[in-house]
Amino acid sequence: MVRSDALKNRASILAAAREAFAEDGDASMNQIAQRAGVGPGTLYRNYPSREALILEIYRDEVDRLTGSVTPLLAELSPREALRSWTTALVDAMRKKHALGAALSPSAHQTINDQTYGPVIGAIAQLFEAGRRDGSIRADAEPGDFLQLTGALWRAAPDRSQPMLALILDGLGVRGPG
Image 1 (cartoon, rainbow, N blue to C red):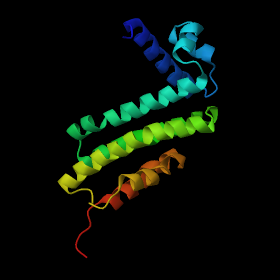
Image 2: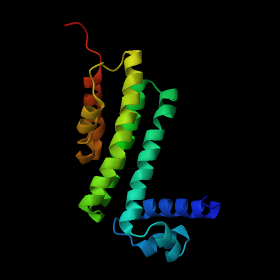
Image 3: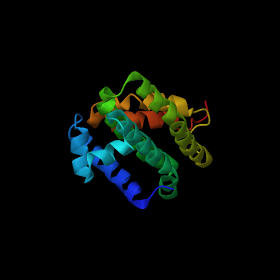
Image 4: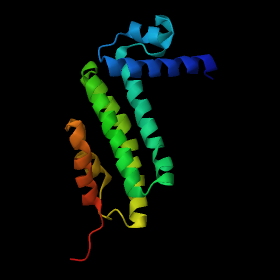
């Protein structure tokens, strides 16, 4: 069993790393340890390398994204939940890309292998809710949607919402003919 202080240290390190990398993608491990209020030994005991820390940030972000689907569906229509969720996904993709240079090709593959299934599952959950209320067409595929939205992180920030609107319009139920 993990001690509560160890869990607190891990949470502090992740929060500090997120902030540090958002400010400077080249933030050092020592800067992160200082920001987290832990010693370098504590940081390296939890994350033996910069790459391990970045991978954990990605995993944590995907866990938060996939865990947000049910609450979003409880408060928003399926299409609006999908819009909100996808906007958060695009933001996460931008962050991942900004830190991507720090990862080896095998680490990129590892994170893709670990996160693809949960992300597709989240999209499928959103699609199913939309199918039930008639707002998302039956032939829409989560993998296709992910591939289309993958282009949004590359778009200028002021263009991603109009582009997302086009993608969401394409998910709409077609009328006769």
